[in-house]
Image (tube, rainbow, N blue to C red; front, side, top):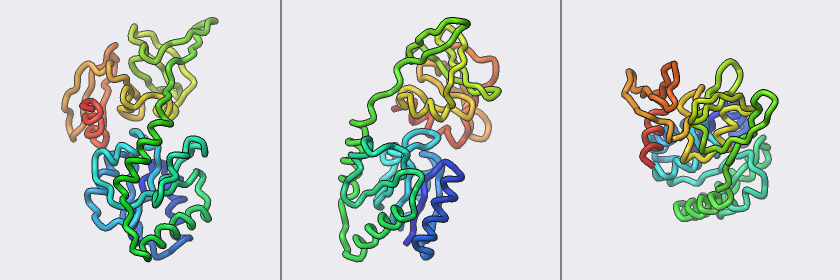
Length: 255
């Protein structure tokens, strides 16, 4: 069997590789990807994929976006840290999910299920099933963070999300910059923010910045396929979108 693994955390990827070989050492891992952009490339490159193991939360957004960018013909086993309540939409025939940390027995059952379908020459309608899955998940996942409680001096203030232009990670802290240019320390990592914020409104530009779409003042081409941004309110240093994220960033702006 030929498979691909979509996972953005190196330790988790290493563990999945190990578990897959424990379950069936004959399984061939064709490729791995750690972002929406690189996952699209993998599915475009490889035609004969028996199944994919795909993490839901990637560094540049939810992996469901992959299905809007490329046709995925193989069955998918999703991996996720979501609880059982949020996962009721995932009980779709021929598509499975595994809760992190992944248990080898759960992985074994999921792969066995796919092998049974292949041996019985059952060809499920994966496209329809994925659409059902995505619709169900979106219905469960429409609630995003609407405000942040921020400490300023001896006061606590509640700042609405729509007033935040961008977030910056620096010196082991994360700062929220408001439309007025005020800077506040918040008790979140950028990874946590990307899970809590609406991905249609906020995008992780690089390892230091998550920006509100309204804060993107202008976009300029840069060397090696990178993009250089001007933010509003202005930021003193250059804000660069890497070549790997540039395509997804442009797609986000055009969505």
